[in-house]
Length: 113
Length: 113
Image (tube, rainbow over all chains, first blue to last red; front, side, top):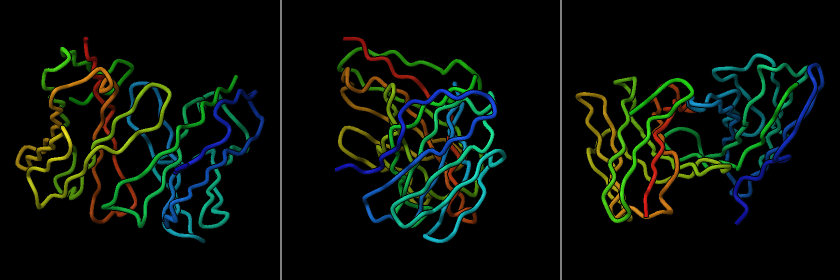
């Protein structure tokens, strides 16, 4: 029962470097999400994909891009990392969007120096 | 309750006691609510949900109460166990923002043996 799998679990980057965070779900869910979690704050939505082939901006999309590669996979890319993007990133999925629980991965802890 | 900033409100209870964790949500139009549990180093885990046409819902050892008049949600945990120690937070969903949940920052529950 893998659920939502995120890779890598930890990463340290230098300012200006790029990287892609990977997420895959095996629950046949249509909707997928990327959040960031900062100390003492609620999860904030970066981007989401309501269904395969669509992506939309969330609350804090600046500095990020996403790709819904197929129904299972949804990646998050930082093109030019900044210290303000130091955070824990969570991927989630739900069967069909709102009014349904979202299932989360265990996160990627990203530090940008 | 909810908190913004570095320090989460903390609730300390004795093992075996009942716990009540509160959440004030922001939008009177929200029609779906979820409680999540987050253990250190892990992703949020779904506990229980409730729709706005209900004021109470029970699960195994947990009960969620919804008071729409004062925009208040509570999670009651019966016979609290050390394994219940975690951060608990609520999430609300608006009917016209189908894919967007708004998350509280959470309450830390410490269960003393």
